[in-house]
Image (spheres, rainbow, N blue to C red):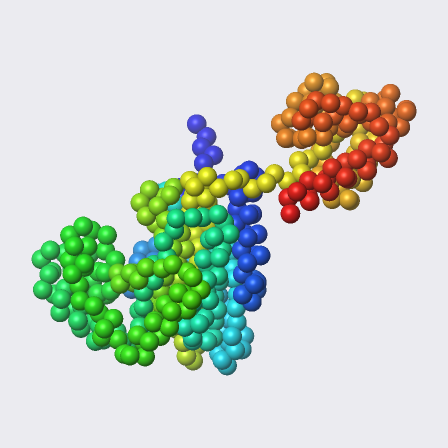
Length: 427
Ligand code: HAM
């Protein structure tokens, strides 16, 4: 039997569902500019090195999850697994390296070859921002505020904001030494993956999900106390700015994030509704990215929210569906001449911004009314030879089945008024 399903881990988004997506986007487009962010659209594939160098060779995303292919010239390209690296590549073409700040937001599909599950797709969508070019705890706190304002505006309640600090490169060696000493003494109780991480990337032990490892991690030393005073002050300042903004957060020392570019502040917004176990609906932090051929790292702070996950949480919380837009006016024609006239009237109404569907097939009145019902129309315009002759039309209101006959001119202004009324209600 033919199978018309899309590939595993991908999905089709039909118009009813698309209205939910459009609301996610529209809300972002309304809020992010309040913080000076403008939209940046980058390609959905990049040279593979942008991600290898940007995200880090050792990360799970780069090692196991990228969709990589060669172009005809034999160059390695990769479908973007996240937005930040490509955005930085694009900004290197601007004056951002001269200390000029750039604030951008982006939205679109990302690709990771993960095992599909609730809220985990191979093609998923992110909406995110990056504030690039400056280093300041104020920028970190403001970016978190923008995210919280966005999540609130979507009607999402009951989330937790987790934050932590990764320090800077100079903080890592003493912190790693303390963690190394501790985990080396506990190696017998750790999973195979964490044993390998001990030599390669000790930080990933901190967010291991295995019960045995979590038990050990809970007793790990306070590695942040090994950071420089400057880094600790930086983090305290971010926390006090969040306090002053009235944003509730929890400091989570086990939040390390899976991408290698982070320094200083990292954060995640987690939720349980609709996602099975607790999952991150948005995440981000401050970063330093080394891209191929760049003279020095590019720094910034940003986040990305997973759009599929935002929708799952909204729907699980019972957030009201997006308001229906004015449903299309449906034109029923009895006979050829009436259809011609209806096609013309439809064109006029559309020029005034009204949505209209004309039935093109020669169907019975009953069949055309059924089609109007399927289209979700409220107002149906009905004309036949008799109405044409008298320059009138019948307008049926499907809400109460009432119908009135009126002149074509009166009909036009009646429908425009109804449209205006409904748009007013939707603002
Ligand atoms: P990330 O944590 O890899 O960070 O992804 C951000 C969000 O994208 C996650 O919190 C989750 O909501 C969503 N997400 C990730 N993978 C999937 C998937 N397979 N299916 C569905 N949703 C998913 C980043 O991507 C960073 N670029 C964020 C950032 C921006 N950091 C600084 N600036």
